[in-house]
Length: 234
Image (cartoon, rainbow, N blue to C red; front, side, top):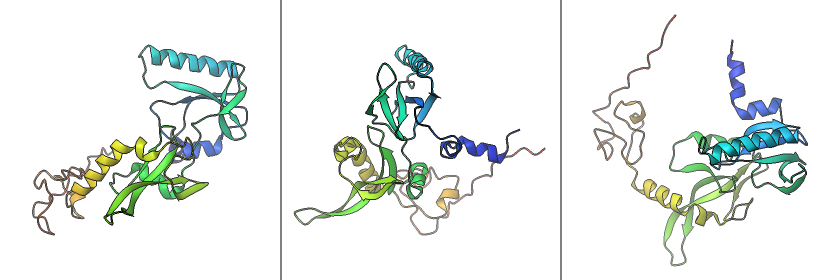
């Protein structure tokens, strides 16, 4: 029978603490869609077994049976992920690594906020985005969406290029940044009690079915508490 303690191992950060990756271990890593949590399909010290798993995953991908199984084969070498040659020997540092997020930034991934966000570069490197005051050469002032590093061994440092692949981040995320900037400028007013109201939609652009532009006064007369979730009792 599963206990609350056993369920903790669903969190990969906790599970890896008891069974970390070891030197010389081969990992078949899912690389599409790109994201910073390392998604390991198979791990083994047997290069041939890992190769067969990767081959099966690629067959599923190219036959369209599973479009999320595009993967690559890496090996742990000097605590990093490396690409391997046909003999399983490490040859080059992989762009995708087992990134460890600092605890101050980890919860940003699960938060629906227009003020900060945790997202990945095209190489899988995680970045923490937040607003920064900026003065243009003509003297105009505005807030701009800007990235920071958020790893355990490198966090809180503002960057313009990805530390992993050197991509210009403003170009890579230009469309996403434009949408976020517009959404933040146009988001509607909400009150502290809105989240518990049954009319609340949790959408910054259209928060309420009764008041689409947000409540007019500081006290909303339409507030109706959500019905509690039904639970089965033995």
